[in-house]
Image 1 (cartoon, rainbow, N blue to C red):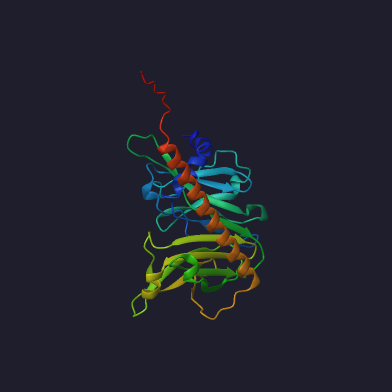
Image 2: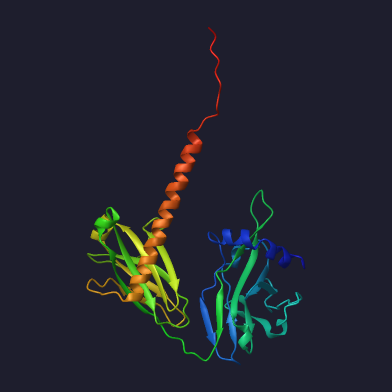
Length: 293
């Protein structure tokens, strides 16, 4: 089995495409530790895996395999025979009936993003890779700070041809990585619910110190539901609802402009691709017809 991690590195590009639809679960977006403290990285959803081996990777400039654990092994031994320069710093432990990657005493150069992956088998295919979303470790003395979150209407319906849009901005947080989600609640009461998969279109943008998500929704839905933005962060999850009288800051205005630029470019690319497809579809083979007198 020693050849598997090398094959995994070679197949990384195709794996990243696959992981958009299927992936292992790494609940922690970020983890912040001081030098000398311990840290553990979880990996869930391993019941999807076709085998028992779960591989662990460290990503700085490049992906490097750390080793693998065997989920059928209750002792959670980490096999590290892959030449990682920090291999002696890593171990594994059994938590919540699964093996987690552990660093007993973190150092500054442990700051990186850590991924788990495994092989999944499918009918009529050999195997393909599924990855976790990754957990970014920051080794620093800085304190974790929850984001300040604001939500407000980003544009009028008239400008969006019957649609409406909401802008959610998270700022002033550390670490800077956050994860956005939107929920809706009926205006006449009821519990907040996750948006259906086909509900609205969402775009995200990140720049130094700020992250934003824009939600495009149908006009009729705005008459039925009120929407809230949920921002997941290492410091905790923050909820914010629309502020009708909110005045955006200059940073939020810049983010909004960039989001609309992304939306416009996306629409242009789609239209151009569709037009090209129609031209190629309608263009028949050239024929030379000769008519006899």
